[in-house]
Image 1: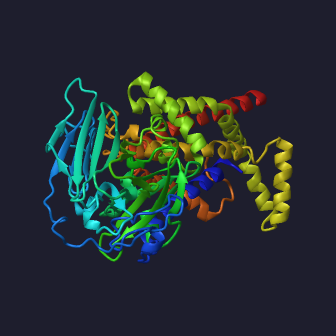
Image 2: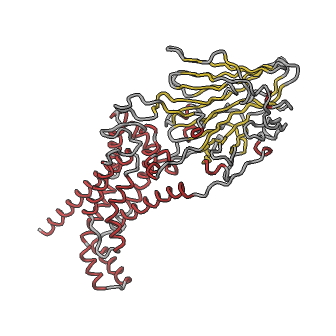
Amino acid sequence: MNQTRTFLMFALLAVAYFLFMAWEKDYAPPPVAAVASAASTGTQADGSVPLATTDATAGTPAATPGVVPATATNQTTSQLVTISTDVLNLTVDTRGGSLVHADLLDYPSLPKTRKEPNPPPTTLLDTADATYFVAQNGLVSSSDTAPADQPNHQAVFQSAKTAYTMADGQNELNVDLTWQDAAGLKVTKTYSFKRGSYVISLTQRIDNGGSQPWTGNAYQQLLRVAPPKPGSWFENYSNPEASAFQGAAWYTGEKFEKLPFKDFTEGKDQLDSQFKGGWSAMLKLYFFAAWIPPADQTDHYVTETINPDSARPRFLIRAVGPALSVAPGQSLSSAARLYLGPNRQGTLDQVAPGLDLTIDYGMLKLIAVPMHWVLSQFDLIAHNWGVAIILLVLLIKGATWHLTAVQYRSSARMRKLQPRIAQLKERYGDDKVKMQQATMELYKKEKINPMGGCLPVLITMPVFYGLFYVLKYSLELRHASFLWIPDLSAHDPLYILPVIYAAVMLGTQWLNPAAAGMDPAQAKMMKIMPLLFTVLFAFFPAGLCLYYAVNGLVGLGQQWWVTHHIEREEASKVA
C-alpha cells in the first residue's frame, strides 16, 4: 500500500469519526421522560428531599413523607452568606445551608487581553436558570416528623454573620450554620476551608436536647441542568465544551462510571446502588464538583431527573449515608467533603482515590497520561505551552524517525515503480487476477514490501489519537497564549495554523503524486483533502492545530530528505 492510499485511509477515518460525533450530538433521539418511583430511589414525592432509611445496607424507606407543605417554618426568610478564600468566592443560602454559587478565582472565564486585562473568574455553581448548578446537603429523620420540621436542605438555618473572609496569613476558615426545633434537637452545620485548597469539609453535628431518640440519615447531592445547546454549528465545532462530556459520574471504590444528561431520563445505566469508599460528581469541561463521603462509609447512591417534563429539567446525583441514632442528651457528627475546582492532572488522587479518573482521555488513557506528563515537563522548561507542544512533536518525531523513514522510503520506491505498473495495466487490461500476480512479482523482484508504508502508520496512530484527547481536553491549555494565539484551547483566531496544515498536505501530495491507475474517485478525494482539512482544523483548538501543523512540517521535511536520498542512491548506481 503506497503512501497516498495510507494517507487517504487515515484521512477518511478521521473525517468519519468527527462526522459521527456531530451526528450523535445533533440527531440523537430525544430522551423519553420518565421518573423513577420514590420507593425505588428513596426519594420524596417532590424529588428534592430523600427519605430516611433504617438500615445502611437495606436502603428502604422507613417513612414516606409527602411534599413539603407551605407551613410557617419553610416560609421563614433565608439569607445569603458570602465566603471568600484565596481561591474561592462562595455563596451559601441559609435555607438548607446549600452552596449556591462558586467562583474559581485562579481561573478567569476569558483569556486576558489588552481590552480585558482582568476578566471575571470562572463560575462553577450558579442559580441562574440556564446554568443552574448547586451542592446541597442535610439530614432526614426516620420518624413521622413533617419534612418542614427536619434539618434538610429546605430548612432555614441561622448564621452569625453574612460575610466571611479568609484574612492574610489565616490558613483555615470555619463557617457555622445552626438549626433547632421546638423539641430541643439542634444541628450545627460547619463548612471548613483551608488556604489554597478546593476541598471543603462539611460537618453536621447533631445535639439531641429532646426527650426522644433521633434517628435518620445524612445526605449530600448535586443538582444541575444540562448546559445550553450551541447556538450555531460554528460554536458546536469551535467550542471544546460543546463536544466534551457533560453529566454525572461516580466511583464505586473499584470502577469509574459516567452518565450523560441525555441518558438520565431514558433509564440507561441509572445509578441505584450502595458501595463503600466511593464518591459522586457532576462533570463539565476543565472543572467539576464532587461529594466525597468518608472512605470507610457505605452510602446509597442514586441518580434522578427532577421535573422531566419542564423545558429545563434538573439532574440529580445523591449519596445517602448510613443510619444515625442519637439518644437524648447525646451528640453525633456526620462528615463529608466537597471538591469544587479544576480538573488538574496529578493533584486529584491526593484528594480521594479514583478522583483523577474524572479526566477522561477515553480508551487511549494509557498513552494519553504519559504524553500529558511529558508535555508538562516541557512546559516547566519552556514556560510556554505552545513551545512545549513543539518540543513534544520533536520528541515523538525523533522516537519514530526510523519507522516513518521506512514508510517514506517504501513510498518513494513505490512511486518509482508507477510507470512500470502502468505498463502492466496496459498489458493486462481488465484482467485483475493477472494484473495482481504481475504486480506482486514486480514487488518481489524489486524487494519492495507494499505494506511497508502501512505498518508505521498503524503503530503511530494510537499516539496521535491519544494526543488528540490530551491537547483538546487538558486544562493547562485553557487560556494559554502562544505568539498570535491568545488561547490554545480555542480555535486559531487568524486561521494561520489550518492554512499551514493545508500547505503541508499539498506538499505531501506533490511528493506523492497520484498512483497510476488510481480510481478517479480516490484521485478527486485526494485533491479536495487539503480544503476539507483546512475547514475541519479551523474549528479545532489551536493547541491541537499547532501540534499537527508542526508535525506535518517536520514529516514533510523528513519525507523530502528520504526521497532526495533515494534519488541520489539511484543516480550513483546508474553512474
